[in-house]
Image (cartoon, rainbow over all chains, first blue to last red; front, side, top):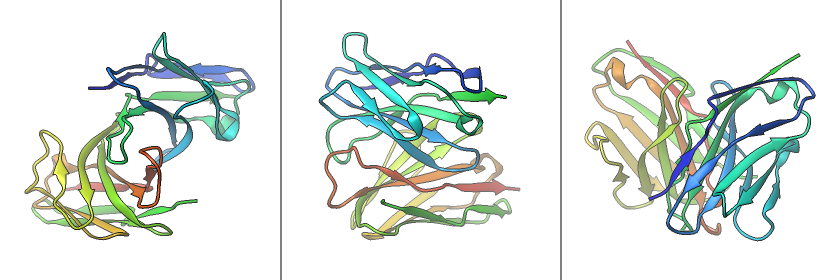
Length: 114
Length: 118
């Protein structure tokens, strides 16, 4: 079984500051890793995903994440945040087959202040 | 890109009535669709996996007779909340995996349906 832990429920940050949202996972097998963003009253939008290859993954809106197998982590980073980045961010893990379930973390609320 | 729609986006109903939520893949065919439930300020919890032409697979603790799922075509899955009660009030989100896609890296999410049961 797989699980995902997002260590911070809320992350407040000032505009133009860097931010890191932490995600750790647990799995007995190899997995795919994802970060999704959810704006209020909306569905989820894929920010980025790690399937294989380079451990540094670049996504949309200037976000990137680094897969660290030894630490079982997949932290999300952005060097300079904007007010519009205020949203809920979910880390997720899944197995390798097309019908494997996505297991989500509990989410991190990123609040960007002017 | 792949687009998934949900209808309605918002519904209010009286306790005891049934509500149907539609999930459509607009520009791709989806053999597998997933239904999630999200309570306020919480994560998404998978309710069921829906495969076209077969019965849905429900997660433990989800009442299949209460949450009826039908996946009649490659572009449409429906979730019917039967005899809804206030505790069923939640945000319901579907996702779809393209028929021609690769491994589970391509789950596209709908915008969600807010259900409020009075």
